[in-house]
Amino acid sequence: MTVRPIRLFGDPVLRSPADPITTVDDRVRMLVTDLLDTVQVPGRAGVAAPQIGVGLQAFSYNIDGVVGYVLNPELVEVRGDAEPVDEGCLSVPGLGFPRLRHPWARVTGTDLDGRTVDLSGEGLLAQALQHETDHLRGKLYIEGLEPEVKREAMRAVRSAEWFSL
Image (cartoon, rainbow, N blue to C red; front, side):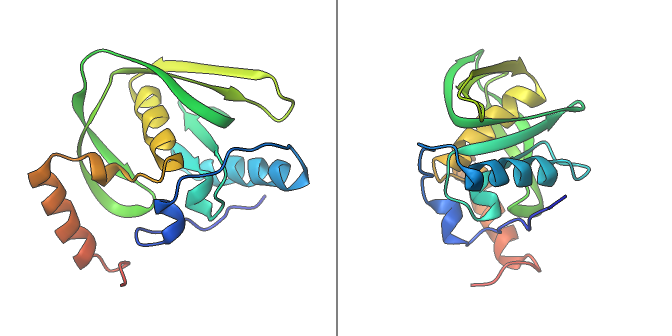
C-alpha cells in the first residue's frame, strides 16, 4: 500500500491543467493504485492525480464506503441550482469555506481496461465530482469562492502553519 503525500497550495502542479491519459501502461496502473491507496485514509472523499504530483487526468473517490477511480473524467452534467456547501481540500489543509456547488453531478470517463465509467450522484458525491474535475483543470476550490469569502480564505492560507512562499 502506497499512500502518497498530498501537494499543498502553492505547488505549481496544482495550478496546471492535467494531461489526458492516452496509453494505459504500468505507470498509469501504478498511479491508479496510489490514488486508491491515498484516498482510503480516513476522512478523504477524493484525490486527484495532481494532488499527488502527477499531471494526468485521473482521480479516486471514497464516498460512503464506495471506493473507485476515473481516468480522463469529464463533468458532463450538473442539475439543480448551485447552493453553498461547506468545502475543504486536502491541498488546503485545515480550512473550509462555503462554496457554491450543484446538488447533482455526472462524470464520464474510462477505467484501466478502456471501459466507460459513468458516475453520478447527489450530495457529497456530486460535490466530490465537481471538486476533483476542477483539480484536473488546474483549479482549487478557493478560486470559486464568493469574493469576500475568497479574501478571508486567502488570509487564512497565508497565516496557516503549512503555508510557505
